[in-house]
Amino acid sequence: CGTGSRVFVAPWDPSNYSVGLHNIVAEIHDSANRSIVITQEFSVDGSVSQLTETGFQVAQLLGDFTLLLQIQFAGTIVYLFILLIVIRKDLSPRIFAFYMFVVAYCAVGPLA
Image (cartoon, rainbow, N blue to C red):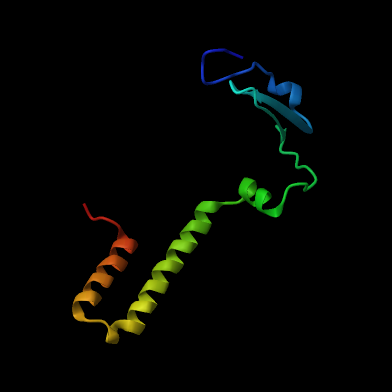
């Protein structure tokens, strides 16, 4: 560990932790004399703990959020186009053109 730097690194040998679950504990103190202890379970070999975490925490660690965001993005664009088709009769041509621009910009992004 170092003092005066922002990044702290402690030497460790991953081969000592090659099998099973292990805990790493960090105790943090600040200049206002506050402290907190954080414990994180980890494994090098891919072992999985009993699901003591919530389902959301497991999803964060094991999930593919890029796929989720892509599906959400596509759904939003489809929703905007459907909304555009439904309300186009009630919009003035100027508002309709602006709305169409916003939908197209969201779908394609800037062309420059």
